[in-house]
Length: 78
Image: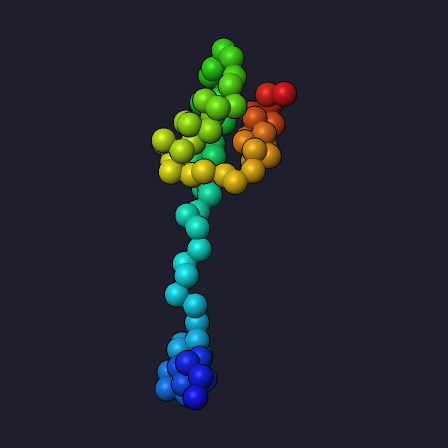
């Protein structure tokens, strides 16, 4: 008998749920606001500095630079 079939027969649906919890969450509303305020208070902007700040302060690393661009857009930085 296959592993998953046996899991289902002994533990029902709970037996076949994946244990993977997914990646660490993104910035919450409050953290998002903190980043935007940080950006607004800077005299100049550097994308690498923003990436480092978000990772250091909140433990978040976006896969796409587009997410960082969106943060700048929300802070009204072009």
